[in-house]
Structures are given as C-alpha cells and as structure tokens.
Length: 640
Image 1 (cartoon, rainbow, N blue to C red):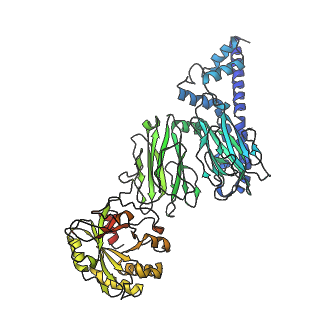
Image 2: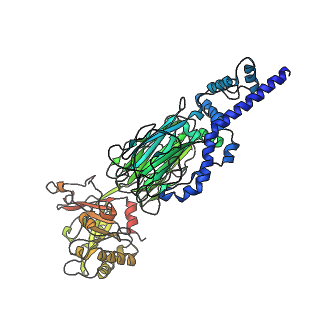
Image 3: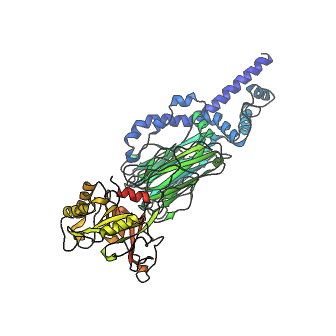
C-alpha cells in the first residue's frame, strides 16, 4: 500500500469513527423522540383539562431527527463558537480537514486522542448537558435525585408532591438555566425559581397541583424540555413542553409523580433560535387561570368575555445578544408593582385583582437591537394603540380592567405593529355642580365649573319652576348640561313608565344635548332595581339616549344592579367625612374615589360633598367630578 493509500485509509477510518461517536451522542434524544411517538395516542386520552399539544405533534419524527446530523456534536460547537467568538469550524483548529487530522494521527496520535482534541478545540459540548431532579413527598420527605426520564414521586400510593428541585448538569462553559414554577394548594402560583432552588413548600402539608418548566439562555437554543405529571384521579397526563402547564389548577388535585427529559432541537430550530430572540408570554385570566404560552404578537387573555387579566409572565430567550426583559403591572388597589424579570410573575393570582396597565422594557445588549411593542384590550375601550420600550399601556386610576394583551419584538427602528398615538386611556376630569329649586337665583355665569346638572322633574306631575332658566344659563355660560328626574317625588308618585313619560315630555327640547339622569333615592329604593330599569328603558326607547342613574354607594352594593350596569352608567354619591366639619371652598382635585360600587366598579360621575362653596354663590353646593372629557360628556348626551 502506498503512502497516499495509507493516508486515505486513515482518513476513512477517522470519518467512520467520528460519525459513530456522533450517533452515540444523539442516541438518547432519538430514542426519546421514538418513545414520544409511540405514546402519543395514549397520552392524549389522559391529557385532562390542561393538556397542551402532545409531544408527538411538537416533536419531529424519528426520520426527521435522523435526517439531521447529530446536533450535539455538529451544531453545538457552531453556536458556541459564534457566541464566544471562537474558531471557525471551516478553518484550522476544531474545523481542520480530515486530511490534516490524519496527518496528525500518522505522527503518533490515536483516533481517541484526535477526538478529544477536537472536543477541546470546539468549546463546550452541548451533548454533555443533562438534568437531575428530586421531590418532597408526603410522609416520605425528600427522595433521592433521579436522572432525566425517571419518575420522581410515587404512583399508586395517593401521596402528594410538596416540593421539587431541578438542576442542569454538564453546563461547563454554557450559558443558561432551567426555570420552573409550581401551583401550590392555597397559595396559587409561586414565583419562578431556577437551577436547583426549591419550588413548593416543606413542612406545610400543601400539595403541588401544577408545574411549568422552561429553559433560558443559550441552552434554550439547543434543547426543549419535556415533562409530564401523574395526577390524582387522572393518572399520567400527556407530555408538556417549554413552559406549558402540566397538572391542573382549580380542581384541588395533587401531583403524585413527575418525569422530565431534555430533547435536542433540530439544526433548523437551533439556527433560528441563535439568529433571533424569542419572546413568549402568558396571562392569568379571571375564571380561566393560566392560559397557554403564546408568542409573536398573539393574544394572551380574552376579548368579548369581560374577564380581567390578573397576572402575566414574560420570557425572552435565544438570539445572539445578551440581556433580557423586565415588566411591571398596575394592579387594582395596589398601583404599580416593582419590575419583574424574565419569567417572574407580575400581577396577582388568587386575589381577584385586575391588571389595569403594563410597562415592558428590554435590558442589556438586546435593547440596542430590538424594540418591544405591546398594547392592551381595555374594558369599555377595546384595543388601544401600541406602546413601546417602557411606555404605559392601559389605564390608571379609572378602575378599568385589562382583558388581553399582545406583545411583539421589532428590529430596532423598524415599523411599529400598528398605531402608537393612544396607548393609554386619557381621561380629563371635569368639575361641576348639581342644582334644583333650592338654588333659585344662582348666577351660573359667575360660578366656576365645567358642567351643571339641573333637576327638571319629579314623580308624575312636579316640574322645577326654575328648570328652563337654569338649563339655558348653563348652556349660555359655556357649561355642559345635565338634567335629572327625582323618582317617586312626594305628592305625585306614579309608575316607572308614567314618570319616565313626564320627564321626557318636559325635557324634549334638550334631548341629544343634555346628559339625562334618574335620581334613585329616598322612597323609590323600596321598589328596587326593577322599577329603575323600567324607567331607564322607557327613556331610552323614547329618546334614543341612554340615561344615567344616581344613587349612594351603599345602595349600589345592597341591591342587585347586574341587569342595569351593562347599559346605564352610574352617578354615585359618597361624601368625604372630613368635610362635614371643615367646609371647603372650591373643587377638590383628587376626591379619593375608591372601588366597590357594585357591578360598576367605579362611578362615571362622583358626588363627593354637599357642603362646599364656590365663589359667586353664598350657599352650599353639591360638588361633583366627571371622569371623562367634554367629548365623552357629549357622547353620553347624544343618541346612541
């Protein structure tokens, strides 16, 4: 055999050996993919209420896995070389030609030594990554750690899981973490933890009910994490993937066992993950709980169901740039929370509190290359425009729930996903008074205010003798006009329909230009919301204008207004106690409107005092705040 033939034989032998080593490195992942396919149909039958797509759907076929050369030995060095700025695999060193490697072997190096040299030059070996996990089990305490794919917990003993640790191994030189959070009896969702920290409880006898697990950092470019749980009454549920819910919430069922595995991504998936960051997010929704993770501008939450978003998780992973994501939620009765980072929960769960607004920002180098856009679907307003890079989306101080969100990454200075002019609900607060014949002689030209609500009628026969002059002075002085009817006025009480007709006949000339109101207090309270709804419906049928209803906060809570609130807005009264013995002159900038007004949440107009004074009038006046703009007042006055 000549020298050239000898060299070629050594090259061939090395190629066969390296290929065989690569197949061995990928064998566990291929075996798992085959196992998942075989179990797909059975898993789907036992998936229960929270099963997401089965692994058989989301995992490539065995043939596809085989078509791609073993990712652990081929693709991982590529990704790590890019990240570390290391040697090019097509150049000398880790990518040296087989001919050059054979020459080294001819000089005395064995194939095994050459393989070791290749590995050392290529940088961290993704194929070395695995995971271990252990669980705290009722009566048993902490079990011994197990390797991936093995069961931790018990089966057939009816013992609850109470806590869990999960750790990655073989991560030398590789950036990334495994992150997980558990849904715990009585506590709800805990904050995510990572890399061996405990999630759950110890010594409190509380069951784990659900779990989510995902990868972050460079490791997420190369692996997916799969997991399934053995659930009380359900048995083994289907495999879940990358942050989807395994187990249940809202059913009080214990987790009894868990299995967790890593599965290598294909070359195509790794290339996409390395080239572009991925932003995933999920919402905790009233009556629904945690929804599935979504990405790429998809909707998290609901629209058209009047359900509040209560909490959010957001995760940024992959891409060539360092950094992450932070976000904050404005929460009912709490206000702005502190910033949460990379998978931590913003908002609350189990407290029935609405998210009212959000702010989201990128951090680190990724913020130099991408913008993050987001917008909110807000109660009564629908989808608002897009905010970006830490701007506010939603509303604050108005008691309006966020019902859904969309989030999207855009390359720096790229086009926004949509309009950006109005990402928040802008409310201009207007100040005004309400008057009746008790304020006869008031000069509305001299009294400060944006609006005046005038008593027009009462019962079936009473008309305020000063109604027309007060209404005209209001309009001529440039103020907005409202007109109200006092229900079941003493001496002329009648049916709801008859009183509505008296009101409409009297104020007919102002229909379309004045806000119309039913004053629901005193004797009419005994007749209940049904009487009020009949009056409101009658006025709406005759005028095409949806009237408002006036009542105290206590009445709003003591009676059932669920049939009224969806169509008729509230003018609510609750006087600030500190003003009783300390009368004020002028309007109050912030009358401290609070939640808790029955199904309305908060009123549209708030009457906060009846003993205040305004320059230009010597008597006390009722003081009111309208939470809206002049255009919104005119919209309430107009025919709908």
